[in-house]
Image (cartoon, rainbow, N blue to C red; front, side, top):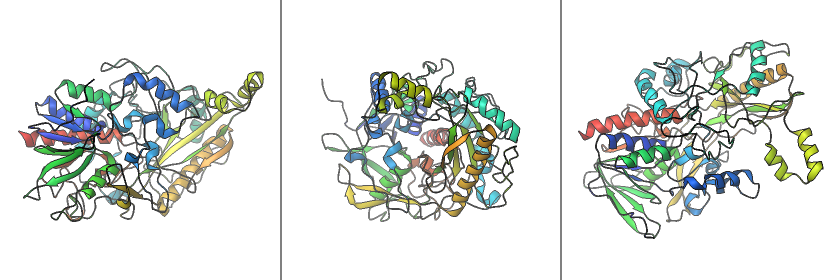
Length: 547
């Protein structure tokens, strides 16, 4: 069998770096407008036929989490020299489809307040666009991803139409939580999910494997490889295993001429195009810009502001759980079907309840949302495979220790700070000899207070429910949600930001960025729908520029 052709595409209108959701959507939209598009993807193309085997890797204790999607090689080396270790490879996938291959699939719009955080709440930054600017692109993104939702969230921003697909029914454990939440005055509502509740866009409905993160074997959950297939049907060329090494300008330092990429045999190629789009995520995009330093751009490409790599922020996890003296049907659903945004724009509000509730708070807090976890507690497969016993003894242990767990989660907003950043670690190199990314990350006092506040609310609800609380994740032991934001922030001032509101870089007029890296702030919402909306906005601006 002959090796794939990984030579450059001649006469490309647009070169897209990255085949995740942003790159896939940009490529498909531009191809649909008749443009010649090539996509360079650092990782491989995964075979759908292997997904059940990858699901087994995720379940069996003999395999590490990195192995599910073939991460952890020298290609993926990184450093984390900040105050807190940032486990970058725990939630990355390099390959066609990107991190949507193992994401949870929750897709909600940012609140209107998220776009004016500094002027409205006195911290963070304002976006140079508002919710109304992004609203039509949100609707397009929901159709592109196939979002199932009930449009029943009273705290969400205004919508123009219902979600494309009907919502998934609330789970059994959702109903248990709803009882306690109603008593304490906390409104619950459905969660929009990018997974098919019925056949849609050539994909089957969810069939309930329950391994949604890190593997959906059925294709019922959206991933960007589906959009890549649509793009290729329109003429897009995708070159996999082609990591871009650097971006090169010519005699005109304000115009990008070439993306230099490597192939598995070690050969370097030069891809020319009229326009370039970076869609490789909030860590690899700033890394590539920094690797592309030259005499004309000594601090890195598009980095006149010094903001490339800075203002890295994520969402923090707050959680709590335990057991009930009743059956909860834990792990019957592998994704979240109910949430509460009741504290999103009012994080200090009081919570009533027979177990004492929570008093209101006047502290400076950030936004947070509450999640009701359908996959609380260990799965029966996990328990059985890790148990030291067999036969009847194992069955007795499973009957005694399984099926009564409940838990709550939540995402907490982290305000962007310049000292949280992605830089190059020149003491460590990847498989091509390039410095690896160094994620320097810490928490501020406001975020820690908000984590404490989220835990207070979670405990009030769980105690109202009668849960024997056995664990908690808060300020001391929190971890990231792996939503990489802010490292090429959007703004109108070229001395303070990297890209303009139209997603073109200030410094290089044919270089565009479609990623969560452009988020000035991230609120407390899962970012993929906003990434998709911005990618569609970017494609519109590119199509107009190419006319």
